[in-house]
Image (cartoon, each protein chain N blue to C red):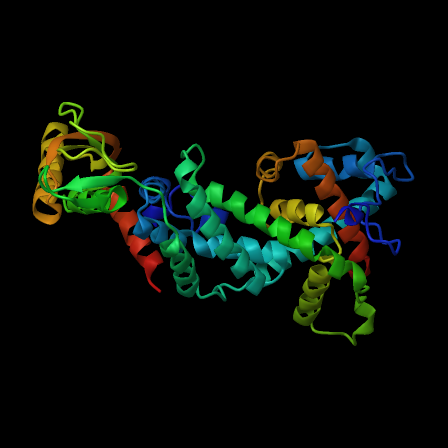
Length: 195
Length: 226
């Protein structure tokens, strides 16, 4: 499709930048319809991001909704140095990080369940086995600290470069690498039964 | 919250494994994985059973991660339209501090907020084929100094000066498009608002390839379907 030229795979449903820039300028000057169009254009990608970060579509919906409202308030200061989509990605990521931090005590109380080793199943079909491995991964991700989880999800599920993660989260690239490493270390351990 | 930083109290300290963790062969695990990620080569790692085991563990994790990504629903489970409605309900209740502009003649007391006037002007400009209005600011015309100071947050009564930025299709003659934009703004000010206009500054910010634009419009329309 000619309209797809030069898009990153992760940006498959990301709107084209000059239309976004125009809508963002209008919205910054108080045009609510322009903002509504931006919400429609960016909500699907941000909901996917929120779900990956939080592991729950319902919580992602709340986080994305709150992020859009706070973006509307901050829009007059949005100078268009970053693309609107990048700016929103950052707002949603930080909102999700706060959600993860606030629910941390609950996770610590229910201790993280031990991943089930595949031996427990009686020669399951491959598809079911794969599904079980994915389910175990989701459980294991709950055991990461909020900071590790956010860095790991952005790196491994969203394919964001270390440099951009550092910018988004507001820490050094080295710190991001450290968090991703510790997350991988923990997850390889948790998933050891699947090797 | 600080207690969570040091890991869970039951010994499952998730920040536990240090980046300095060494494999039995003396290589740092972090280094072995980083080399694998960047596609670098290390003759030692290729031979070493410990490095090999560490790499297999990483690959196995990557395999499950790839499957997890594939398992994500193709059709998103969210009702984006409902979400947008909830966002806009909040947005419309918020009062944006904005300036108020005079309407009508000098002795009248009719006013309009800048955002509403700007929206009217943008809509008028957008009726020109291949033209989209971006920023639209409205100021008091400095040529006609007011006799008395206006109320706070309001511009002095008198004709306004409009500055509008436009994206324009490549096929337009720029002088012509500036004249057309000016005419649309003055027409809308006159017929729709009853606002006196002293001048319209037109700034062309982008020249758009119209073929690309057509594709984009198709995408955008599709994206807005509930």
